[in-house]
Image (cartoon, rainbow, N blue to C red; front, side):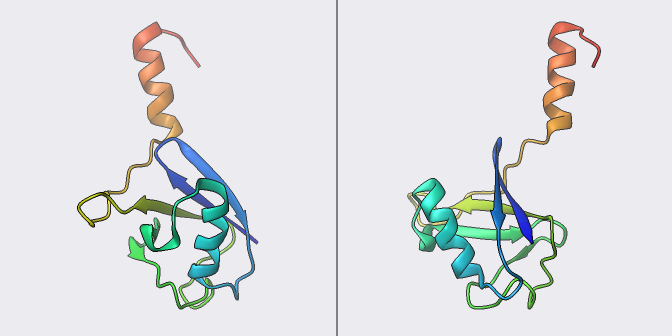
Length: 102
């Protein structure tokens, strides 16, 4: 299976197994984005639930092709808000700027 991890305008496709823990997913992300696992928070977009590091994807009902938001710890030790730029927003803003029709 795989999950889509989104942050801002970036999407990471992570190949994983339903038995993997969230901590294991964060370790895979660390190799991609160089952010410590303790500074990452993963949120299942469909439900808004913060995913628990010690539980597996299956335990938290994360299914194949699920969209998971990645937020990072800020300097004040709080986590940033979820910020995902959707492609539809991108195309709408381009339409408005150029008058182009997609």
